[in-house]
Amino acid sequence: MLNLTIHIVRVLSIDFYGWDCDFLSMAKVQTPQMLTANRLVTGEVVYWARGIWIGSLTAAEVFADGRQAEAALDQAKLSVADRTVVNPYLFPVRAEDGHIRPLEEREIIRAAGPTVRSDLGRPTAHV
Image 1 (cartoon, rainbow, N blue to C red):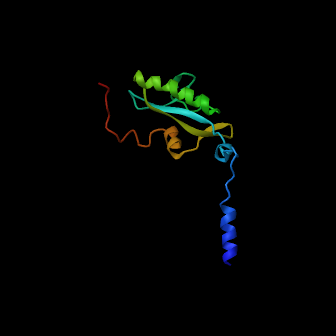
Image 2: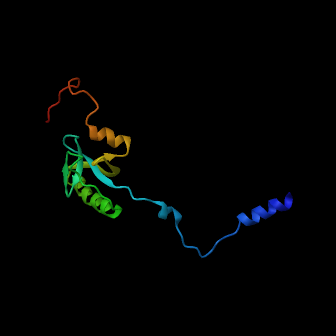
Image 3: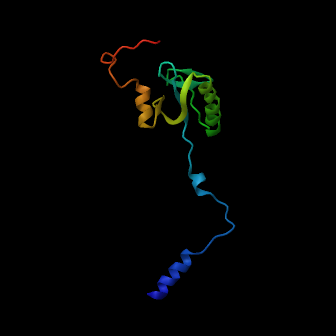
């Protein structure tokens, strides 16, 4: 029994030098992404569409390539500097029945619109 245990430990401790294979990066499948933020003045959820912010998820731009998505995010950050939007970020989506659907619960809720009844809130006026 002791010899068997030693043999197993020796087999498991073999180092394979010279292999340059990153299995984690190979296993990554890039999920399409979209870019979203909130309009600073109104708080409205907005989506990126070829350099402008729009209110429609269905008309927004989908990025299949991660590098393009990151480049768009960098460009969108200029909108933060000029005080158009706050907190731009990427989120994963999928195509389902010819429509784009967010994968994360937060984005599903944001795409559906406000979660409170507008008739119950206190009316506000822009100053």
